[in-house]
Amino acid sequence: MPISRILVSLCLLFCIYARPAMADIDPAEYQLPSSVRTEQERKRLEAEFSTDKLKEAQLQRLEEVQAAQKQAADKAAWDALPYPVKLTQTRCTSCHVAKTFESQRHNRVGWELLILRMQYLNAAPLGPGERSLIAAHLAEAYPVKGVASFVEALQQFALLSSPLWLWVVWKVTRSHQRRR
Ligand code: HEC
Image (cartoon, rainbow, N blue to C red; front, top):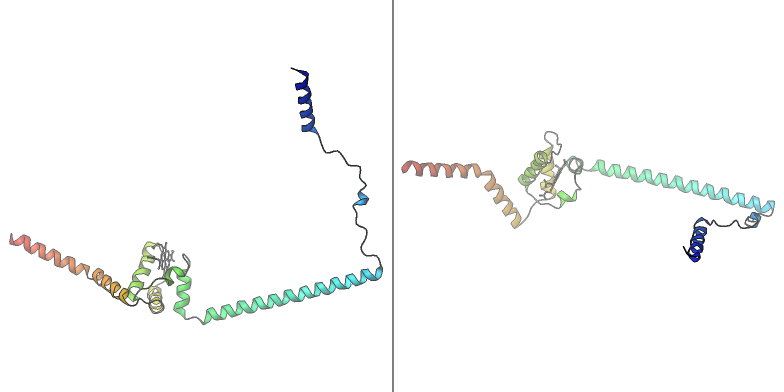
């Protein structure tokens, strides 16, 4: 191995193991000289600190009182809501935000069917009688209007009368078969 390579290798080794050398500095040079020079000044600063502390405590107490007032106002507003509204909020917002149903428009039967779907498809936990209460509230607050109401009623009529249509179709085909 040529000598130059050995030298370069040694240099690299030295670089890897080199540590920052201890600087020869007096730590006293870094210490701040005391900014409080006189006893009078120290007293003044102490007084300033304690008034600041007092002000902060007062501010904190005020914030606590305001938070408690807001909480009480929120609770009063919630208590003042009609029972079906509260029921809808508690039963229907456990899985999705209120916007999910507030953006929909249905008639009374439509809301009943939708909540039935929530119960049997998504296992929404509702007590006895709660479905009709919620459906009545939603039908009043978010009713379907205009052409859409006609379309929804027609769909519901077709769905509810489907057993009758099926029965008629069955009768007709049977009587046709008998005549042959
Ligand atoms: C156990 C959870 C759960 C609860 C409670 C629940 N839902 Fe749902 N809901 C779902 C899921 C999951 C979907 C999405 C799947 C679907 O459409 O069935 C959904 C979808 C919906 C939709 C959108 C349907 C569409 O066709 O766009 C509406 C509206 C709705 N829910 C209304 C309600 C109402 C009103 C209640 C209160 C009675 C309720 N949900 C309670 C789980 C729940």
